Length: 127
Image 1: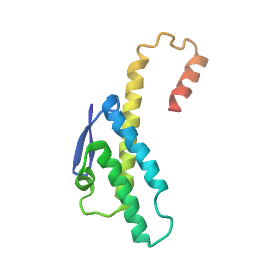
Image 2 (image 1 turned 180 degrees about the vertical axis):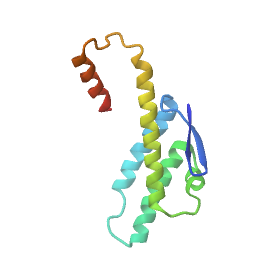
Image 3 (image 1 turned 90 degrees about the horizontal axis):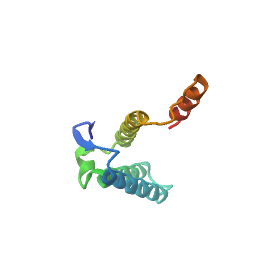
């Protein structure tokens, strides 16, 4: 488990925890549906607010109701929400790489020659 921070908001995050991943998966499913339902035309300000709500709902689903308010306050900035989404994604990729490194220690069939090591490294870098 690690501490993820965005602005003044802090939360314990563990992408290796099944319960946490279940909330992330649900939030991911919801965000896809919500983006499909977004209006395509209208005032720019209304479109931005609708997109902000999608991201607010995403973070509330993962961390609990009221999280978006803690993270963004009264801000109506889409760029802040995109930055937060990018930050949580980068945090996840860091933990995934960390878990992969830990589990590599227990690999039975480790690459024995240079060609196999290169293949394995290339395959691992694609994740």
